[in-house]
Image (cartoon, rainbow, N blue to C red):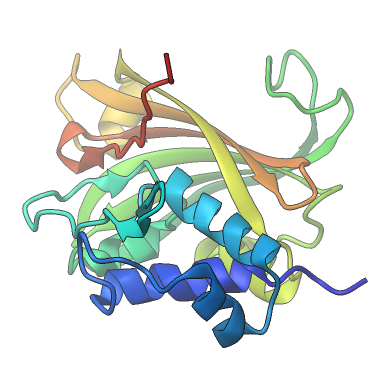
Length: 243
């Protein structure tokens, strides 16, 4: 079965918008023009435009085409981009920072209610657990505990944990990473996290719980990230329901 082309259309238009080829408040080419350009159906173009709208890049306007609503973040916004699916190195690169990762824990275990309560993984699912310290320009900014299903993502090694699991998933396994459901909260840092992040005792940190899904609809990963407030930001795209 041929793979759908809409992810490629989505990615191409997203990169063009980010580069300024389609400026803020400009109209994208029409559906007919995009179909001709990409050699695809209207359904594929519409699916790509829906993806861009859902992530805050465009806004369809009835009878007037599709308008670009994405704008670059302010330079002073230095947070870990928690509203998208950018990796830590991608986030640092966008902000002119040098990323570094230290692998603190790498182990294999089975999912159960004691190890990972409420994870969404079936009991007995083989998992890879990685605890990574994220460092930006020599400053520790986040501690992440990642649990990845070996049923969905086989072959993760310590080297892959350091060099980038998403690059391995997308580049080596050819699996599309599409959606992450996230919960944001603030909490008091544990003694261990305060030590790792060079924070005073009783500091508060941002906590992000992420459940991430691939193109098959299967959950392949759960992440519990703790970030210093100075490196935290969240982008949320919301729509007002029709009345």
